[in-house]
Structure formats: C-alpha cells, structure tokens
Length: 424
Image (cartoon, rainbow, N blue to C red):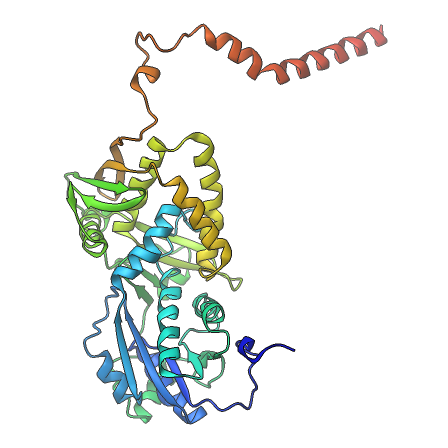
C-alpha cells in the first residue's frame, strides 16, 4: 500500500475537497481569470504567488490586482538574485545550450518560480497548486515536475486543460463578466516572456518560418545595422566559473547582468531566431534576445579554452547537452542534475581569470584572455627558437601514433599483392 504522503498529482482522491490553492500568478489576463474560475469551480480560497525575476512587466500593482480578482492573499517575491545565482549562472557554468542556440532563459525560470510557489503553499496549508500554462507548451511540464519533486502530496490544477476558455477574446469576456480589471485587448500579436536573462517572442508573424522577424519582435537589442559604428570593449572576470566583475569592478549578479544587458543591447548582441523542438512534440519558432547572457557565455567558454585540459573539456561538452535537455525538459530537481553540478563544480576549479571581449554590430568576440591557472605556455607554442621542446621527439611520437594505420595499410597491401598473384 502506498503511504498517503506519497499521493502525488493525479493520485489524490478525486472527491477530496480542495479548500485552498496556491496559484503561480503573473498579473496577466490568464492568471487573473484563473482566480475567480478556481473559486467558482472548487469553492476554494486562492493564494496568489507572484515572482519578480526581472520581467518587463510592472509588478507594483500586482498585489492589488490579485486581490481585486478575488485572491485572499498575494505574495510578491523578489527572486532576481536567486534567479541568477542559483539557476542562470549554474547553467552558464555547465555550458548548457539547447539545440545549438538557446541559452534557456525561460526554462530555468520555471523551476525557480514553482519552488517558491510550493514553499508558500506549504506555509499556507494549501491543498493544491495551480498554474496558467497552456496544454501545448513546455512550461506546464516544468511547473508540474517541480511540484512532483517538492510536494508530491499536493494536487495540481491546470485550468487551460479543463476550462471552456479557448481564446483571448473568451478570456477578456470572462474577465469583464467577473469584474476583473482588464487592460488587455484582443490584438495580442506575440506571446512574450521576459526576465533578467532574456526576452522572447513567439506567435504572430513568427509562425511563418520563411518570414523575417519584424522589428517589433525585438525589445532588448537594437538591430545590428543600427548599432554604433564603433566597437566597444569589456573585460569579464570569473572566479571558479562564476562571473564576478566587469572591467575590474566587482558587482553582484543583478548589477553585473544589468550592465551587460545594456551594453550588449546597444551593440545588437544576443539575437537568436530558432526553430526548436518542444518537449510536447511540435516545432515552434522563437525569437530570443539574451545580450548579457551571450557575452557571459562567450567569455566563459573562452576562459575554459585557456584553463581546461583537452579530456575534461571534451567530456564537459558532451555532458553539457544532457544538462541542457534536463533544464529544457523541466527536470531541474533531479538526482542527475545534482550529480552533473558536482562534476561541473570540479571542472570549474581552475576557471578563474579575465576575458576581454569586442562588441561590434551584433558580434561578440573574445580578443584577450588571461588566468593564473592557464595551460597555455608561450615557450611551448612558439614557432620561434626555444629550449623546452625537442622537435626530434616528434618522429617517435608520429610512428607510435600512426602504428595502427601502418599495420592496417601493410595488411591491405599484402592482400592486394596476393590477389594479383592469384590472377597471374
């Protein structure tokens, strides 16, 4: 018999009453509609949980809006530093990039929000957790896998998989009928997600992969052709793989990334147009802007080129893809991700130093790197005269390195000679 404490989403008794729900609340149209819908459907109290992770939305009125929509309480949590220090920067250190381009800005935001939502739910004695993710996207998986990992005994409610609202027009009509403050219109061109790490746009004209992304699909970066016609330079400093300073000035994570976002955005750095494979099986097109994250990613990778040995770097690159898949698929709170973090932490011990980068009209290039733990030795690499490398040693190395090829070639040559002899 499964202990009651093991009851997870979908395992709780269907007729068990739901008295209180903790809702992941953004303040937008959908989650504002969810509050009265939950109360009508389940006769329950709703606790709204809003997270500040640096999104472009103004959260100053989010508590008042939640209460006006019917929530009994609203928590507004400042998670900006935790977002970077505990999610974005660990992913950066791992070198995780999804499908060659995507720096995972939305993906690792969801487990952070869900984790704190669970904490509020447990504090408030809630019976269930709810989110406003649609049944077509990846976010529903990211939220619910976090719920299962951290509070498997709480029930999960996903209104978009249950209610009759099917369009933005339906949601606006529902909100007006229930006296919910509405500023949204039916002319929603894009689905937008933003935080300190990135800004993304989906939908609208972007649904045609042949159509060039219009100017209004970008919000953090200028078009490269409109960027200044003069390069900018910045020095990023790392300690054991953690970004800690810009141009020699130590900064906390939020201030550091804010400065890089502004600099990269001015020079058109960090634009990505990606057709990605969603976890739920379909391809979708997204425009991602990650100016500061792109600068950090390039700088970190270049410092690893200087400080990591070949075998470690190759193995880390292979595991980086696994790490990226875990993050994208919502499997943040898993034993494997924790184990990979332990591996990454070991590899990052020598990744301390500085990288100088040149930003110019959409490009970001490393033009200098230095580290007290660097493996590059000029006296070994020089093409000039040196006293530390005996070039005659290369002859024996080449003979041994190619021994297998030589034996195979001798075998094949002998076989050809035997065939030719047999034909005579």
